[in-house]
Length: 67
Picture (cartoon, one colour):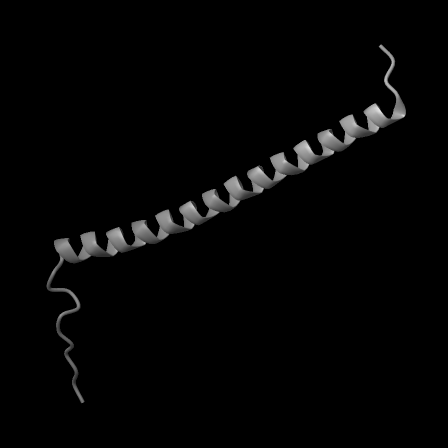
């Protein structure tokens, strides 16, 4: 099967577009994963503080000062 130059150029162009689309989708997936990781870290920090307060509710409620 012999391809002419126009057919070969079309195939190469389509391949390049497909590769660019794949990279775009991968970048979106990576950005989404990064944001989800950040949100999970924040959630864990908040949960840690809430658990600490539930175990020791009296800590941090009063401030004793002497002058």
